[in-house]
Length: 224
Ligand SMILES: [Fe+2]
Ligand SMILES: [Fe+2]
Image (cartoon, rainbow, N blue to C red; front, side):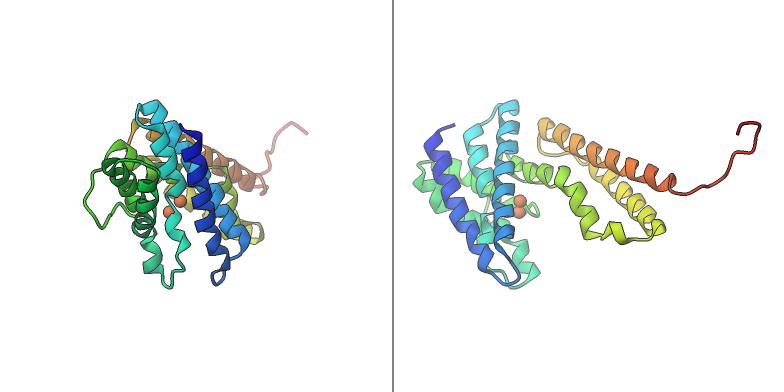
């Protein structure tokens, strides 16, 4: 990977994504989180590319730019669903400036465009590199922070025990389904299953804690 290309892309991504700190209901930390997530996605995408034998630098650069569409101040949820497609429009001229060929740029932009809902508003192919952008995004989204965030969003700490029990049971069922999904490459699928196994193991431990927080039956026997 060429240092200058990576640094220029990082600077461009940071400048674009810091804009969202000023939008309604946002704050600086939200913009920083989006930047940190983008860098993690870039690392994951490059890791997949290296193991699968395709262009690591372009996977890294497209990963850095995958959420660049967040730099727009969206009004509605529907607009927000378009952040991949809008992101591709923002990334395209910048990627051409970096010196990539038209075909290389189109492949990266296609990956950025489809990363939210698998749909682009221009023609392209589901190449391993294009599919890796959304895969890396999903792999990051189901890492350790997610285990915390899911509990935080559910206000888990303050739920009565029975509701904690159903939260854990429902989430376990959902994540078991997710675990069965196949991603764009074998490497990504293996990484995805590893993240889901971690989440499921964590939920299993929570379930055990809930079960042991109740004295269900007292063994009646000769022991004291
Ligand atoms: Fe995204
Ligand atoms: Fe993302």
